[in-house]
Length: 361
Image 1 (tube, rainbow, N blue to C red):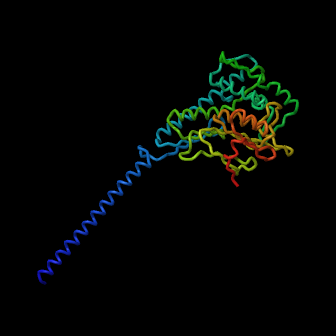
Image 2: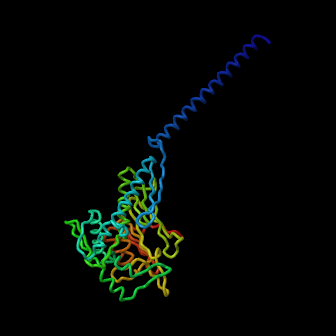
Image 3: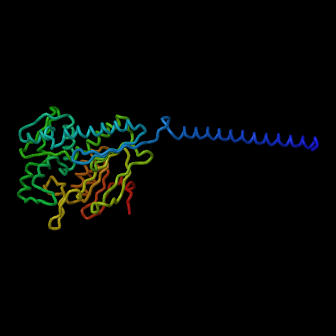
């Protein structure tokens, strides 16, 4: 091989090595640039904590129902701590307001019926005041003293009982908003009739939901749902979308007929399908009309959306008893929305729900 050919071969080898080195260098630069871009994208798409959202859900029995609390956030320890404190609030309110707890203010009021007034906690006094106001606004369709009528009825399907007209008439003498006497300045309350009894179930669960939500917020939780047997209070949105609450078909327990998006609101439903019996072809539900002592029969269900759960809870009962026409009017007067399915199955709703309800075929 002559010298010129050798020189050409050396030159070709040199050029090939240069090209390969250049390619490797370019590949390294490309990977480095991609890594930097990826790092930058991660930084922009995730918060500085670098944690994704976590969901903590727990269910515990309080106030005669199952309470479910769902919280969402990035700090699991904080979520667990907040959930425990929220459940503790349910326990506290149950001890304070349950008529089945011997030491509660409500039990003390019932035991002292007809014997004058007693001192009650400011929180219980506030609930009694709100209840009485709702009684006035609903013309008696909501009334804590409806508990005085309870003993004469039995909604146990195995041994139902329909009281006589005479029994109902006697029981009604112990009921009525005027039988609950409240002295706000003194911090006292009393029941004027010896047989008068009160049960705050139609408003206390909603109040407990509000208090639990307040505790969660104090603990730094901004996304949560508190559900106490259908009385619901939510905080914020469910990450990037609203929370959804279903509207049950009152004649088909397995069917959700619609859903409603909510955020920073409360929802409650009263229906004739949870506890009832049928006798001689007539349905008797456990929600009594305090004005006549008989099961309310103008509605199959009433769903109310309000800014607070105590209001949604109490209004749902009142609207169910009143029926669609008067019930929707009451809801409007108290800045709430309502959806009522009347006794014939026809659907009625306030204007604010017209575009919010999503019907399921």
